[in-house]
Image (tube, rainbow, N blue to C red; front, side, top):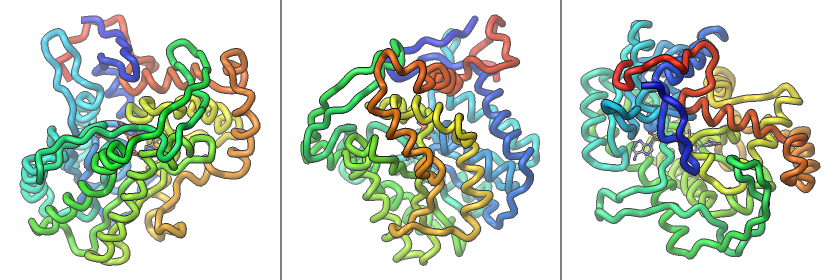
Length: 387
Ligand code: NAD
């Protein structure tokens, strides 16, 4: 079949296998060209390994530090006339390339929140890696079933405490409009903490420790977004921020049990991923950030951020006052944020093409699904099951 993008709301329901493989290869090239990253963390478990920051973490550890990896993700396989999800193709492309480089790369597909997938992953780790030195937690999901109670929680991406009036962008039409978003109820806020807070991270670390597959001196990382005042009303001070604050609590609990250097929350920059495109206000901020950071020569996507984390930050981490590692330093620098704050009030449907870069945002979004990459023949007849 000829595979074309089919966009529905915040997602693209098709993915291109060759484009996804090209994407993975470009990430690998980025790391290889920069050279090795000496590290003793050579047995790595990545939870949420198929796309975004998790995939970049798997690529950087494997191709920068010769790590063997087990990954966990929740992706859809292909069918006869239906493409797989992009993450499924990314996983296959990654495994092929990692194995060709002599590395172990095994992926577990299923719900990482469940006890069954935790147990299966522990067995896969035991068989393939023995133990792990590093656990990267990079899950982003709108829903989680608590394995203890069977209750299913859905996150609500809303302001917390009071309604918020904000500018937002329809990325399909380019229209900038004012929206008013009602605050979350306490129940919605707590449900968001259940889904995106630290509870599942702690359950994973406990399960791995109890099974004896965490190496002495292991490290675990969990990714957060803090952002600037422009997005605080909807993000940092909203329900997602409440959930992310719970990561700091969980990191403290893991450190109390396993030692001062066992767990870090890492603050990363805003990038275009499947998870971030669904958050109100964030795509408008993202289109502006793409333009401003490019103009200042400090553009970064997932692979650049994670490469910088492992290459320059992790060996001897400088921590902020909440014990986090900061890789959002360029996004939050005074120069970038002053320019963001100057342009923000000027943003409208008419000024957007001059002040921000919606074209680049759309390009980045389509690339997540393997579309719009140079060197890929999109007119070719492709079997979606063949990778
Ligand atoms: P993403 O949507 O690209 O990736 C999410 C991953 O989680 C995928 O591998 C997916 O398969 C997996 N996943 C989702 N539900 C699952 C489940 N039930 N079981 C197993 N796997 C599951 O997301 P992302 O943007 O890379 O986000 C990863 C982390 O980085 C999140 O904690 C996010 O808050 C954080 N972060 C993102 C940004 C950003 O701008 N995107 C910025 C800073 C921090």
